[in-house]
Image (cartoon, rainbow, N blue to C red; front, top):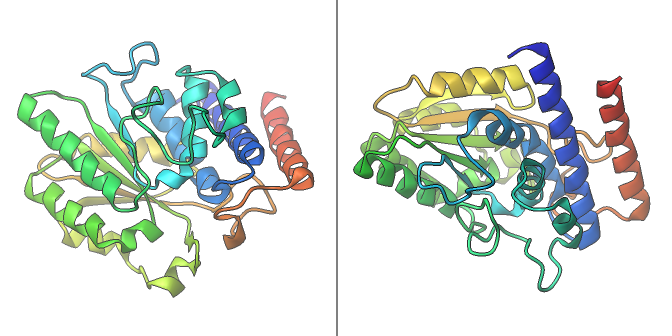
Length: 280
């Protein structure tokens, strides 16, 4: 990609983070840490990679995205709003009673959501079903599923992995947002999820490891994924939980809580400063 395109992606991702904080603050609850770590990948998918159209969100030929770690939907909502699926004003009433945007993605009530998710481990299974459906119907759409690293402790993830490899789902890309932290502490301490790349390889995946905040590496990985034939792809994206907000970065406490008014102002000021520096 050229420099201007790269800059636009960085600016968009910064705005995604701003609206993520806006949503969680106004909800007074939610999951900012993992939303911020996943913001760059979701930005690239929707603004560069995927064949999607906000004016036709149910297009049967569209690429699909499943947020298997559904609690990190604040970032997905921000991406969808900035892409044009709905107004950013909806983000200000995130998680409110009667509002469109709830604490986990709802495919029946929210334009652009391809699968309701939230029970960890289930999203990747649904993505496998979508990918198999494309194979059976002769369609060429691709399916992208984002998992959390802590989510990969769920047995259902590995049942899905076996299914994907057995059915040669080379139109499926599983992206693991590997920020090293989960609700109870570090992933290493909770379950010792070491050598995740080798685990996916042993289950029959082509594995690519990247810096999940580097758009050029994200692009390279997704381009390579499209050349893989006969097996699914797993992208292990090393990220920073709370990325972009200094006091949230690498802090497990920000897995699932909202900032207070002072913290909200600090976070928004930091992100606006980053955006301003990009626009200079």
